[in-house]
Amino acid sequence: MKNPRPIAYGLICLAFAVVSLAGCDLLGLGPKKQDNSQTQAVATPAATVTPAPAGPIPGNVLVRIGNWTLTEEDFTTRLNLLKTQLPDFKQDDTNTKNVVLDELIRQQLLVQDAEDSNLADTKEVKDAIEDFRKTLLVQELASRMTKEVVATESDAQAYYDANKDRFTQPTTWSISQIVVGDEDTAKNILVQILQGGDFAQIARSQSKAANAASGGKIKPFITGKAPFEAMQRAISDLGVGENSAVFKGPQGYYIVKVNKKTGGGIRSFESVKKDLIYGLTMQKQQAVILNHLKELVQKYKPEYNKDLIDQVVGKVSQ
Image 1 (cartoon, one colour):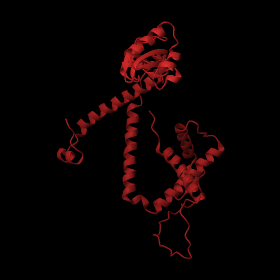
Image 2 (spheres, rainbow, N blue to C red):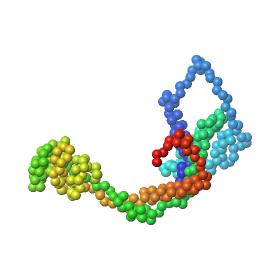
Image 3 (cartoon, rainbow, N blue to C red):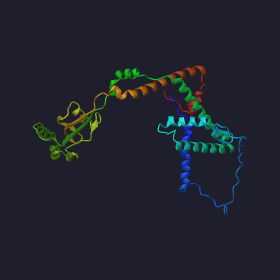
Image 4 (cartoon, rainbow, N blue to C red):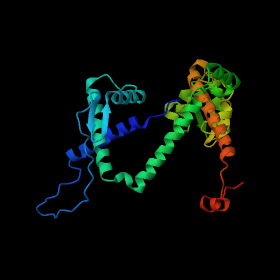
């Protein structure tokens, strides 16, 4: 189970940030330049500039900014990370590599400026860095624990065989209706239909429903989603082309005809195998982590201030 690497994420975010900032400035939406002739200059704290190391740049280093260097190996690693997260990323394309190099340089320039401005010493940044460090540690630990935990095709087949009812496709019904105000009229219409009368034509001439002009056609629906329960019961045993008996509904007395039925079968194992293997793998990996957490509770024995937890977090009802 691969986890996203922060450097690739950071690189992508920086690219969007740089483009966004440049775009705002070009459109006149960025900060407006002040007129120095009318505005008094505001003094800013002097930043600590990191001195560049002495000596020529090493042969394997592409770029050096202060004490930071980007080696050929580092650059290749970053290209590979981007490829794992962006399948269409063209890591061997010259233009693409130049864009990535430019973004890495811009990123480091901003980082260097932030560090020289002592931004990294603020509580907010330190807290964010610590939270991110914890997240990375948990991700890496979970990745190592579950690296070999995967569901097999046999696991998927066994689950499919034991739960076939979960893979049944719902039946989609296409039906037409005739609605009249009294039962006797409805029964007479049903006789006409059984004697060969055209259902759609009778619906157009005698139905009082809003869809009469369309021959009584109702928007297709799946089993259990009929306009009302009595209609669902009326069509449950009907085949295509069959008519229901007269039944009462919200607007009067109804007769319905089944025009078409689709679905209702069980999806094949091959059509669900990939999703099953993925889902079962996630379940197995989650079980491994949860079991490990139980062991950690016994190992480290967390101590709880129950009264304070109830006060701050809230008491959970039993």
